[in-house]
Image 1 (spheres, rainbow, N blue to C red):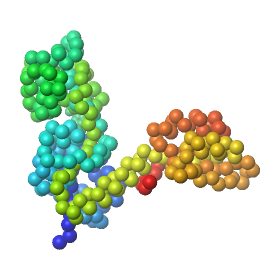
Image 2 (cartoon, rainbow, N blue to C red):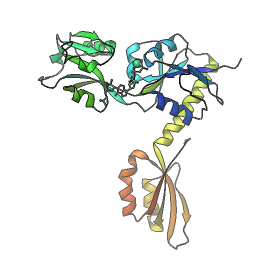
Image 3 (cartoon, rainbow, N blue to C red):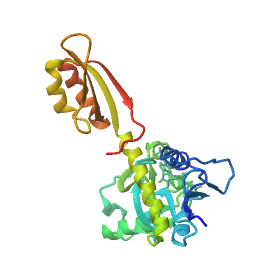
Image 4 (cartoon, rainbow, N blue to C red):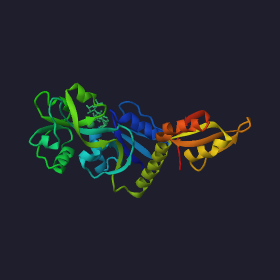
Length: 286
Ligand code: PRT
Ligand code: ZN
């Protein structure tokens, strides 16, 4: 029987859409009809299992799934026999301690002897231990942000993204305990066939991520500017240069890092570049 790598993804929630999108961009074709428990890719030896995110690390440890996509916060909290094989760059957030806005928070010593409500007791305990603080941990599974308001705890430790949930509950963020993003985890003891499939998938994810961080850029420029432009956007090896029918001008094609792009654009214009086009890249193999 053909080996399939079983990958657990969130059944519904914040991670689901981007997880499936990344797998599709990595070239996997599958149907993900609503309420399906599992589905098999048509063109790649992968089966997807749809599960609650909190259960995924345990299933990966038990080899019910071979790999999974979860928030790093869940991976760290569960402390299962899982290996982090790739950061995926979406669902970015932080796990932070927040206290009522009226409190005069002076530093971690403020937490001494207090009660902290959280869904992440293991992460909070290790933060407290590291900071030599003895505090109570009150584990609750949802609506953590209301705990101080109803007298259940003095502080909370919860996921923060924009900060608006804290804001609307009269809380302020005082310590970032960890930063998180979606991660691909796997059982560390996969057999060779499964490991080969996982490695191929990781390679493909890499090409998608590299492509996302880069843009294809085209522009017209005076010939005397080619050298200066080449120095700031060298591309993968060197830019492609084609003469324009207008004497003294060329069309220059290159690849530019998305993060550098805005910094470089004014420089390119100052060198005389015109008609600059920036185009997304689908896959990039370096
Ligand atoms: O049903 P299931 O158990 O699978 O899902 P879930 O409800 O446990 O998780 P879900 O879908 O809410 O989140 C999945 C993962 O997304 C989390 O484990 C994080 O890694 C990541 N993530 C990214 C977030 C957020 N951003 C986020 N903003 N998870 C939760 N939130 C919540 C947070 O709990 C708080 O209530 O959003 C609120 C804060 O958001 P802001 O923007 O108001 O600060
Ligand atoms: Zn969950």
